[in-house]
Image (cartoon, rainbow, N blue to C red; front, side):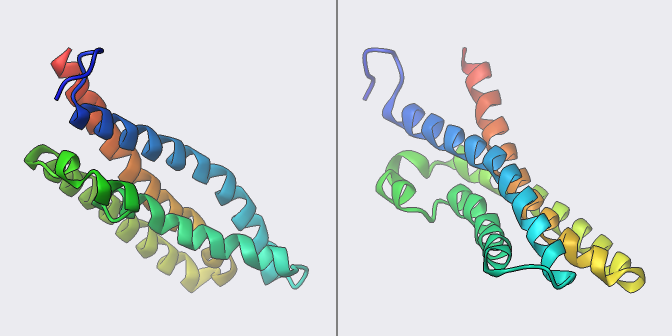
Length: 152
């Protein structure tokens, strides 16, 4: 099925997901700043209820992008027949593998920092969690963009 702009429904669905992933990944930067400040204040005993809320939201948000990439959200389930092809599964695997490596490297680094300065390790957790999620989303969107560039 091709619309008047020459894009198939699959292309539109894939482009929509890539834009959503890119926007959400860059939006996570703002939440990262708020959550890092919240963790810092909580660790120093000056935090309040809001300072607890932001790190909790950051932890949930770190899961959101990989869930979108994996197709575990409502829109992806509705568009499953357009978003579940061999190429998309390949991109998904590449994006998730890179995100896992970033997560493993970051957590290993935090572990080592925690042996020396536990407070700095705790403050670094939101960055590692959200950073690995952002890597997954941006890698998937970049692979999609590369495929569109090759088609053009």
